[in-house]
Length: 376
Image (cartoon, rainbow, N blue to C red; front, side, top):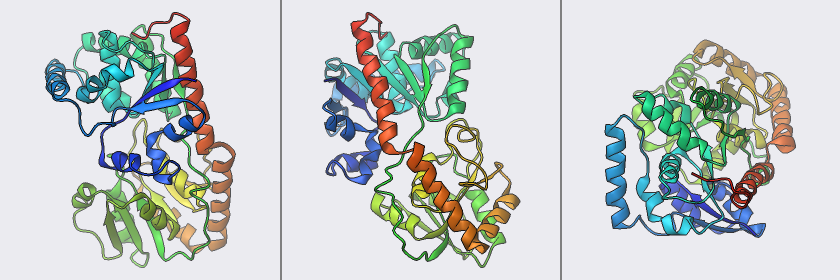
């Protein structure tokens, strides 16, 4: 079978997930690594050691400083360099996030990495616009074009990347792969909700300012925000009907979703984030969801306003409040919306389907090495 080397961003929640038993729901943060192992593939990853080797930290820091001084965008060079020997023994390398993906593609361009790789883009267009010269843009385009395939979790991001690469003369395989949810781990439990509205998230595009505006306009409605401590500090003064919890373990986060009458997910416009992970989890729990119609989720996930979710234009607090209030006041309609949400994820957005698509790309990349295609 195929040997796959995973490159993860080094983060506390991911190391915590790695410490759990295979099959634990929180290990979704490992992007299908357990499922590939169950299917007979050999899997390793860059977080097998507590931290990168000293030489890799020194070299990686120098590369990052030099690249950023030249007007480029850096990343975790140390994490990739420290795993150089192991990843060059694999059949294929999977970069799960741009923090390690950008160093990977540049090191592949320099022939330090000599294996085919699949690059998962999560907000890459926002990083590419920061490149300060046409020369750097061409360098990054050619380095990204060396990937056997680039996958994105948004149809919009897929289109943007194809256009950006094409404008620089690079013909790359950029694939849209919808993210998925474990429909068994997130199965409706029938518990009586005790919070009107729950909102969970920590990515930089979450519009918690809009959510607080909505809460002020609905003073009789209870809100619970679950986020990181850093995000919580940025909220400032909040109305009395808004409670905040921070840095919850995965199982506790799931329980907060189970307690909600409705889930609210306002997001600022961007190319990749539509609160994708949380809206899939909430839909799997058959919760009615009110969310922002960002470009990232406008297509590709089967979302239909007033059919399986409620969608509101970015930045429109008045519309968000109105739709949320209507949903909370009409319990039969809310239950119907939640039931259809569950049907949507079961039919096309399960974790099993996501891993199957990912496995297909990885196997194609591994086979490309035998067919003579270069990885750099």
